[in-house]
Image 1 (cartoon, rainbow, N blue to C red):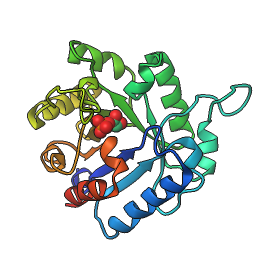
Image 2: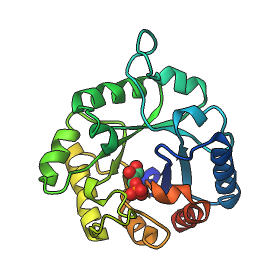
Image 3: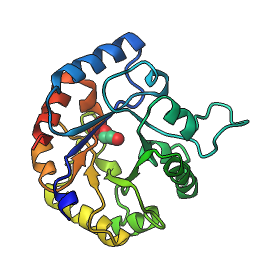
Image 4: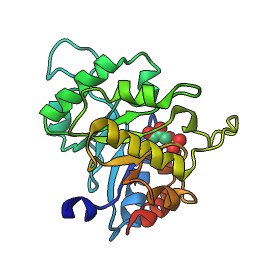
Amino acid sequence: MYYYWSMKKLVVGNWKMNPASLKEAQELFDAIKDGIKGAKAEVVICPPFIYLSQLKGLPLGAQDVFYEERGTFTGEISPTQLKDLGVEYVLVGHSERRKLGETSELVAKKMQAALTAGLKVILCVGENEGENKEEVLRQQLAGVSGVIVAYEPVWAISTGDPYKTKALPTPQIVKESADLIKKILGDENVRVIYGGSTNAANAKEYLEVVDGLLPGGASLKADEFVKIVESASV
Ligand code: 13P
């Protein structure tokens, strides 16, 4: 128990398919690294695969992974290859990948392979607009253990986009979702983080109810991301 309560907050920046060049990636990474010096939160940056070998000095995560170690799988990256680069974390089952056709079966294989290779898995779960949250979470969390869970309701992602106007989940709803995830997994101590339009202004209230955050858009602006990390440095 002591271990759980003493655990630092986790802030994971998911850069998605950004930025457009290695030069910009390096600048953003360096600005974040400088800005968070001395912060008490645990910070992970998930850049595109191609930048992973170039960025040094902060814990790194990959945005996806394949389930085989090597072989005839054009375009895929294995858990072992990530480990070899010093990558510590991997996002698995992000909704933007599920949207491209990734099934729960495939997600489960990736999760298992990543855990076997010794990567820390951040399993992304969350319902689409109009879906039954409990049903979706039960399906996405079936057989899951040993991972960090990121609750990312699909309808709350990228609302910074001016064309989307949907309201975000309240911290109370995020808390209920985190409690539901713990109940489904039968594990009070599982680390649950929240992602979906988090920013410097709303980070603090979400951090009161979860163990960390998974910002996307806000992780591409060093100042904004540094402020989120400051809110998590408790
Ligand atoms: P935004 O913070 O841009 O909504 O993205 C959230 C997300 O998908 C992180 O994985």
